[in-house]
Length: 330
Image 1 (cartoon, rainbow, N blue to C red):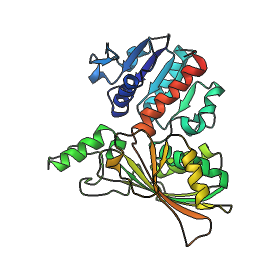
Image 2: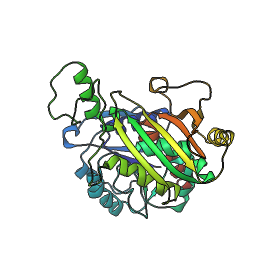
Image 3: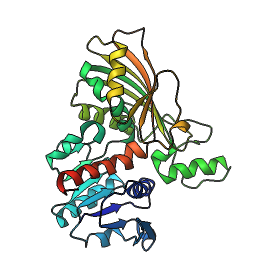
Image 4: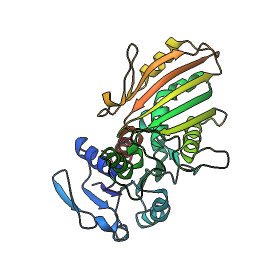
């Protein structure tokens, strides 16, 4: 009898999460849907049952929750997650915000690579940044060769900013005036080499997340990571150009074997693949794997994935499915 709560159910990540709950027939007996006050009272059907959206304040009255999907901002995670834990002593929280990722006691879990961490029984589980998720899926098993350095350029779709990013792109395509735009520059027919805020070293907060989370998940603070994150004018899917140097001698066939052995990761050997090709796919895709002839033990690859699946909602539902098996006899 598993009872779940989805905080941020009307946002882009929350909506996709609900779709996945239906598509994967996630085993729960009751769903509490939480959103902002303006969405209070809205009806949403999940698995043939119509649920009414309630406010965050009202949701704090519920005391028998098992799993909470937090699909909102770090600010709200900081405010509400401790209250949910206090009111529901045995519940698990799967946090999609960045709030708990910096906490050394909270694991960042991407189930295809490190689901064994669910056995630790920690009540808060952090979802990774969407860009980190795609990167880690592709390189996790390559860490066996000793990753020394990575140079990464990301090409991130507007859905990474939620509905506000999507709406800005659509309105600009229609030549409509935009009030309170999501981005500092026009995104239609443009790219923006700035995601998040800049620090004193001219590194963005998105780049900081990618660097920190990669080292944390790989358990290696010595990896040198140089990242440039770019917003691009497509609706869905993030892409990464990755140049990776190893400490040890490694052959391209060994890299291929490791990539092909990773579940939910697909290597395209003799062709390219683009965001439009994999828009509805759950897997992470790698193409253009090649040796870098300028540097020893260095290879390049191109990674593509749907950011709302691997980087957010799919990752969350897979974590929850793991919790069901581990702690709820499902």
